[in-house]
Length: 96
Image (cartoon, rainbow, N blue to C red; front, top):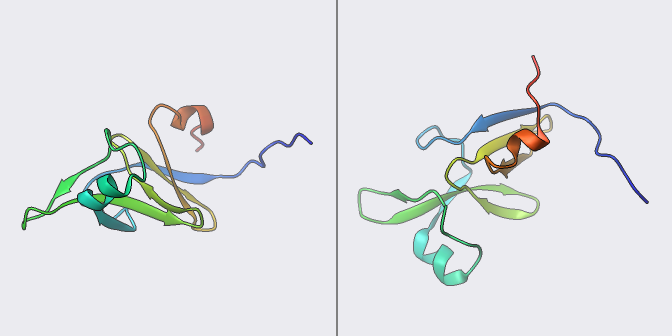
């Protein structure tokens, strides 16, 4: 069966540190040692105590870590997703 994704409107905002856009942070050492994902382009924030953390979005699929240049998408039902700058404008188009 082939299906077409239903059209819907979503808020699309490029991630910025310090704007409370993420759902939380994970310690850099946990991200690296757990082997969850490729870590080359992740946003890394150094806190005052020297701890390095990575921001993430939490949804029903689990944690999605935010990479440099990524966008945060918020669907009408409040569900959040992360999309890379290389794919965002292939998947979404701007509406007024």
